[in-house]
Image 1: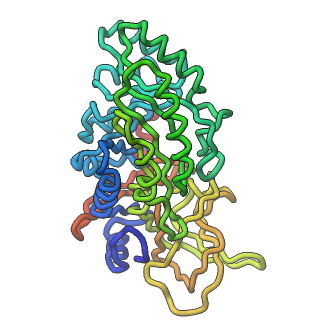
Image 2 (image 1 turned 45 degrees about the vertical axis):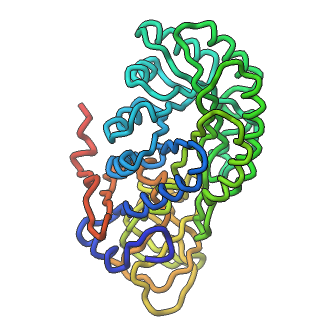
Image 3 (image 1 turned 90 degrees about the vertical axis):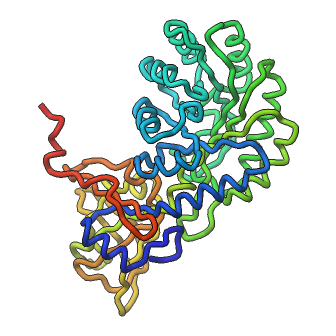
Length: 404
């Protein structure tokens, strides 16, 4: 198509659009496995568990590939837990994150036998202990410490600052480990922190490791793992993003001498570059101010540009000859925020042309909705040059299926 982690040609993209219709999410399964293997090799010098951040893209066909490759999983809801286990992730390789776990979710995690609950507050730790006592199952946990480090892209996805809702301060974390030591139903399994998302430099991880290491030295309990979270960013502009090799060079020296297994939670880095959203031009419109190319995908299919101001590359699958000019790629939803890209350098576009929104494999379909009563698109996974429907396109009947 263009330079990306995908190996799907323009001809194949057009054929997929004809066969499955548009809008259409297309994922390169072979590229996903190659990226996972690259990340794994970068940290091969130390025992490391890569827990796929399920929120990035929970599609079962992709999750199964990673589970079979040996990945663990990071989940943030009971629904994600159920889907992750159904996809084949071993429960002892699953961590349960999130600030608002319900009692039902705690029970589900305890019954599954997870690696750890990433605990976000004193109240959650107390509820976990009570729930574990009722089930007579000891609960493994890791306190999520807030390192007060600014890292990440948009302000909405910065989670490691003290003013955010995430984690606890170091002093409270120590108190929680001391409190847990008095409970027969709690087992301190690890220590966790998470900085944010779309982080492009290894420096914040190095600082987080230093603060976590200092805290480990003050915790009396023998912890089994140190979880430094996820957030590894990709180059939406076509650049390299944060490489796992650079991250390993930043972290591995600081881990020498620590007995804990390292846990990382990559999501976007694994799946983002291996997905594209194919969309078809339905209209063109030029005003005295702007050139608009209207397509059949909208903010209901890919919310990131409207929500975060995210900038995805958009290319014509079959570029036409002619003058190139700036164009706004907009969708059919009745909001001005309904755009996929603004100011894209694009040649002539005709009704029916297929465009590809690149690097759309993460937080695309998973954040989709039926806004404006628009059915969600189909999703396809390509492996070895063969495409398989992984999620069917919703129908008009699906829009009202759960209504009474």
